[in-house]
Image 1 (cartoon, rainbow, N blue to C red):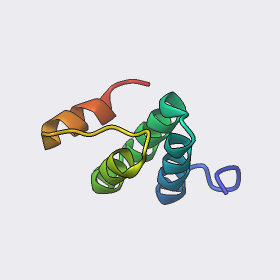
Image 2 (spheres, one colour):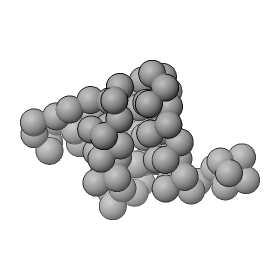
Image 3 (cartoon, rainbow, N blue to C red):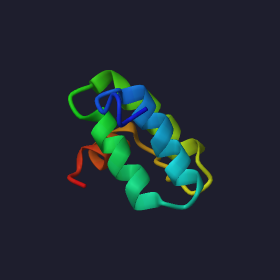
Image 4 (cartoon, helix red, strand yellow):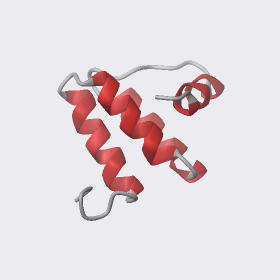
Length: 73
């Protein structure tokens, strides 16, 4: 799907979750940053993907996850 619609943020976020689940943390996080770029409404979905995945990350402060996701890949 991403080959057909590379700007589809929801598909990219779902793909990121899959990457995190299989242990591809760097690729998953990079794809989440791409999904979030220019779409502030995706912060909740990106945060959920990071926290939910067994190989994801956990943050105590919302500002920490926002800062993490806005870092360059």
